[in-house]
Image 1 (cartoon, rainbow, N blue to C red):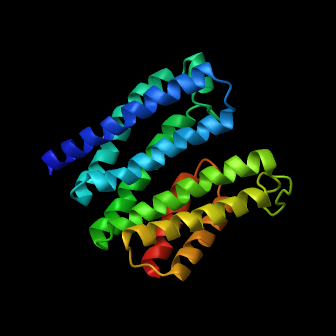
Image 2 (spheres, one colour):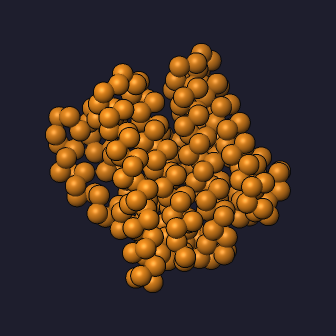
Image 3 (tube, rainbow, N blue to C red):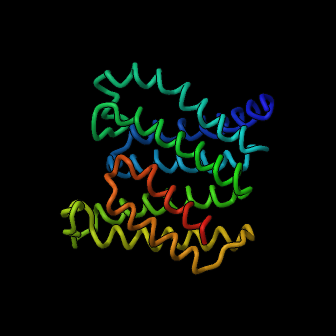
Amino acid sequence: MITQTLLCLKRLILYLIPCVVVLLPVRLFTHIPAYIFRKLLHMVAFTCVTLMIVFADTWQAASLTSLIIAGAAYPILAVLEDKPWFSRLFVEKSHGEICRSLWMLFGMFAALTAVSWGIFHSPERAAISVLMWGIGDACAALIGIPFGKHKIYISPVNGKKSWEGSTAMFISSLTCGLLFISLTGTKLSVLTVVIAALAGTLTELFTPSEYDTVTVPAVILTVLLIL
């Protein structure tokens, strides 16, 4: 398992390095809106954890690699987060958010992989749940922030999110799920993917933004496993 984990880790690092090389100049030398850059970071995060399923030969290697990445990056980020430029560079909403999000994201992926692949022998469902969450969440922000004119006034949302953003999440999450099952041959019905996309959208709507990294993919995976 050690050899498999090291190989998975190596491949993941080879994916992350060019992403960092591209994103840093974009942030430093362009006037890209902060929320767009934030979602670009999220896209790197959820695609890299999805690719770990492809990179790994076993669920143990995938889960362990995820925890190693989080454990190695955390002390570095914890030291840097006190620097004045850190919060601006990574578009933190609150102090320590990047460190918390790091553990939630990679911890969530390790758990999802262990459950979906390790218990139910279905790595595809772990991958599709992360992709449906990641792409849906990105589209919700990219549409909702600039075009969200109709706010949702339902407790506890209370105007913080919009119907446009939630609709964009549902449509993009559903489209991602349908494309995934059609391209990979995963045995999931269209109705199951529709219900999973709707459940993920509702979960994202009522979950504080800092914690939807955990709740949304977990709910989507639960639906995909049960149905």
